[in-house]
Image: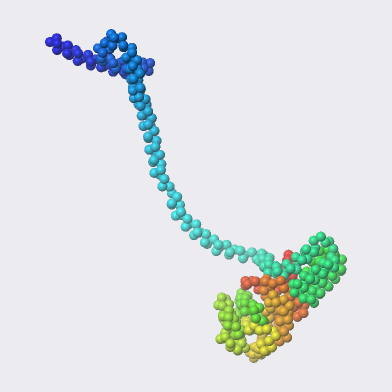
Length: 451
């Protein structure tokens, strides 16, 4: 019995001691002042016999010291691990949302380029609507046309005025040197000897009469005397409505722009509300017939033509018959280009006029001579020969924009006194414009348009 109880007590003691040991350990960790020593001693609590033997031998203190040296690092390691683990767990959750952010990387830039084709669609109708309101302001058209004229006469005008401007610098009076330079500039512009002398005499007389002697006065006198030469020849072409049809015969040498001028004139008459018919009388040059047909197709104007090499007079005769039968108001006849020195070709023009006279004794009502301004004084010689051969009623001076010899217009006006109907200053339809002496001189001298 007693032995059994002793065994029970021995079994119960370690349980109690274990409980007391845990309580001491817990207190040791709860109280920082207890430290690791009390915890280590508490762990040795469940072995009282071993502690007693050590106490008897007097080695308890040294044993505790050895325990402090050996056990604390092992014991502190778990203590330090426990605080390190929670921060690691705390650091792990933030990267999880960061990984979620790149998941939202599919932004909407790929959807934006899909909206790009919307931009060109509205841009197309805008340029169509813009040019429509521009021609509405009529007051600006006159100035813009004058600007085109001044640009077209730039080559001739710059050679004339730039040299004078350089002489005006530093001079307050007009002397013989300045007048000599003016004479040189006029001759270089192909104004001609007679026309140049007439202009200089007029300038000198004007300055003396008004008692002026400065550069501005010289330019004003130059303007007045140039206009005085051209003014009598500034006669626009007028269509006689009583003539049905009004027959216009275009003549000139090769390469002066005769066929192109006819096409532009036809468009001008058509825009004025007149019905027009074209006769392709230039049967010598194959391209001339096709060129005239192209102009007719563009404008919706009928063209009477035959094969290349046909008799020019017969083609023009057929054209006049067709114009009469259709009730056309204007008929323009083209002729083959010929040199003014070729007598046989000049006789052919006389034949054309005789054939037209069979249908209408007064036809042609206007014989229009087309001259190339770049030919200079040679254009004056052409005008004299054509006028003597067939009788010229008016002149068209073309290609003024591409030459510095536009001054030949003064020589033609001074010597022949023929009306200058049109001048050509470019390739556009509006670049064939009626001649106006005042406007022409203002553009030539690079001045503002005078009233």
